[in-house]
Structure formats: structure tokens, C-alpha cells
Length: 111
Image 1 (cartoon, rainbow, N blue to C red):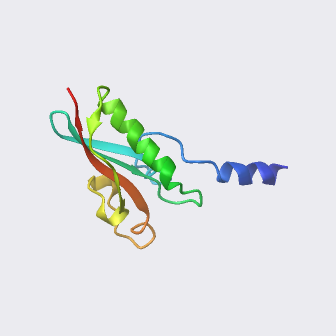
Image 2: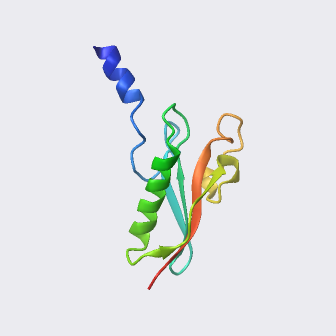
């Protein structure tokens, strides 16, 4: 029974949270950077594990964009790799993580 619980927990979807950038599991979550008033780079990363869900990660990206711009926003996400991340903390050139996809996009808040 304990093995079954451990297996199910190991396959759970990544939670919606800010990436804490800790050594263990810190690259999973969102980060954003404001580069002009009402304009942000938003990225959602999930590095590691076997439960990568691209559609869920797109939903998390959209959730963060909506939080930043409650009146709506212009911008769409794209799938890039961790080696191409626009937010420095997500850049990962090492072989073990460089090819993990992440969701990235620029948003401009509507007034």
C-alpha cells in the first residue's frame, strides 16, 4: 500500500507556485520580470520528473499572466528550452536540463 501511495504522489502534477530556485526542485514554477510599466516576461518551468504536462504548464503561464494583468493582457506563450530562457534564473545550459521545454512569453497589460 505504501508503495502505491508513493507511486501516485510521484506522478502528481506540478503545483502552481512561484519557483523558489532552491537546489532541490526549485526550478519548477513561474517567474516573471517587469521590463516596462505594465509589460512582463512570464515563464513557467518544470524541470525533472516524469509527469511533464505541456498543456498544464501553459495553463499555469496563463494563470500568472492573468494575476499580473487583471484587466487582461496581450501576448501569447511559446515553448522554448531551458537553455534559451529569457529570465536568467531559468537558464540551464547543462545537459541534464537544457532540453527541458518551458513556457515563455511577453505580456502587455490592458488598461
